[in-house]
Image (tube, rainbow, N blue to C red; front, side):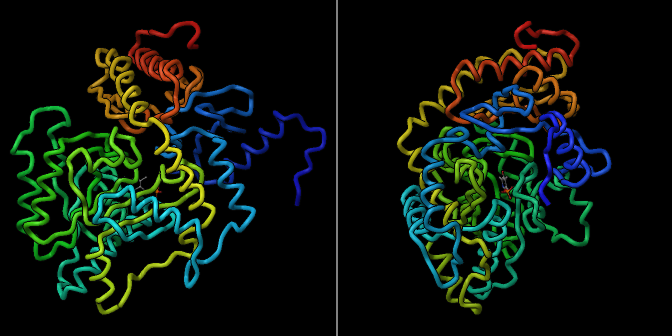
Length: 448
Ligand SMILES: *Cc1c(COP(=O)(O)O)cnc(C)c1O
């Protein structure tokens, strides 16, 4: 039945929509008895979100790492529209299409040589499931079925499906909720040594011990290279990653790099593994893959892993999503990668990094602030205690920016196309709102 808008005012239409939303629609990690009221967005353009009441917010989240070229981009719109004229979707079992081939060509060309085999799937979490399945099927095919455990890092985040959860941080991932349902994996301490600090050799001891002691049971190590995202926004030393690669080789364990958040330039390199000059056996991509347009992810691996799996008992990788290699998403992803490669993204990310360093530095002196850190186009202010999400997001919206802190972390990863003036509005909103929270308002009039 069609809602009869009649002569209701736009305010009334939105009031009804929000009432329905709160009564019926689940939001991420949200309560259904005490739902926070979401802000209605009617359109978005460049780095700005337009709210139903006409206000515009500068977006500091890139819709969770995804929107790297900004919203409503003409080239990405055109790619979607052109593909839509031909077909939105067709099954990938037994059929193929140009959007998948074109995207595959670009991914294979961008990746280091050994990563040649591409599995296209629906979302980041699913690409992690596929990566884990690949690792387990690989050892089955090599007649080592005992090698089926996984080793992950504390402070990591790999998604919300069961296997992905099982390798995410046990505390922030709330493993106790699913005790007995979820497989128990091994966890190494979070790397302590930061990117940019002198390497501390003892930092590798924890994971080195675990890999050596459990080599016979381990299928793979899975980690986010250099930058841990939703598990704590932590940036660690490339030497740690290099040594994990060496340890995996020495003990016959596969290395899975989850680049779902870090991929496509976010950390200043096209892929974060490049900071350490290593190549994983399996690599996951997602988030920025379609520039934030559609859900799509990819798991890449080497010919050796792919061929070994295919020689195993099953004769194939046991996975095949309904919307595998969705043509619409592949077409947009291809245009997105072309746009990235044609742009001066490296300069842009470096400029953003420098500006974030300069403009967030002042936050370190604010009461309640524990640490300020920046890597590429990611800026993080870590507090001593968890922030009040509703109060802070409301204050940010009042200041004209969209930021969504979690736990003790107030952070931003804006679209790469953000201009310096808009980025300054973001950083001064953070300074202003956090200083207010600490009791010494630093907000200028125009920010309110
Ligand atoms: C977001 C994220 C995922 C999960 O991706 P979804 O598309 O949300 O399923 C996995 N790993 C990392 C590192 C992520 O940032």
